[in-house]
Length: 407
Image: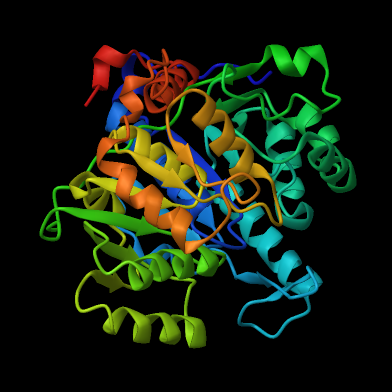
């Protein structure tokens, strides 16, 4: 365990505690948005703290970052149709790209010299790129090393094989001082099927989900509307098609829909959807990407979405009735989360096997949204305490009392 850092006396007046986030982000928006929410909460807890996010997200620059939070964009990688990876833009072999990213990560760690490193989801990073930096930090024995996990990772058997293949089990045990699970054990334990030591499990903290707030900037569309969001959009074409089919087949379906494609739903598929939207005479309004999704969430009377972690947090935060259409490939994560949430009365899930992915099923789900109970009707203690718990634990690691610099 790394030694605690004390910020007292003259040192406290001059110290600028530093928190580094690693977010591999080979695809989608989830990891970056989670890291940004955590960095914002931590820096707001004490104005002396600076946070830096290492991310591979190709759209990182399209998000606003608050004071004391910045990001470094790692060279991007993308998944090929056969499941392998390649460089997004550089034309390098994936091994060269990984080595370049690893060097940038280690250089950032050495120069930024963080007091805390918070790693999102992947204990070894993408293709092991984080290991040199972890080894340097562990040898120096200054920084607290934290592994941050979302509430659900995957089917336990699939996850066990994946972590074994990546050496993630060994790295989790060797390097990390604590593990923060951004969820509740009563809903799901993401590492229940992994062969982890009791010592590791004793250092796990279930924080609750990460609360989100609407941004002051931006206007909401004319109400009422149902917000339709496939998250980043890269795997959301099926859900979007289902919603558009529902509005096409039922000319009386209401309220109208505001559809946000996401930055990764593009090309010919997007063009085909745009043509269909144009024929619906304003009953569906579509936009490509909105970095202020929280504001759109707050104004909606209900939501149709996929089952990603960040969308789930937003639905809970804004207390909106939601119909979740979870993906089941390449991971069961979304289906597991949605089914557990439905059993607790937090959401409604459209299940392919039980309900069918048909326009009729979607029509019925949208029509039922106005009368569907809000998530708050299902009382779950500590459900949205995540940001507060993480902020308090960060301050404790840094030796800062909340009363000294709380926002």
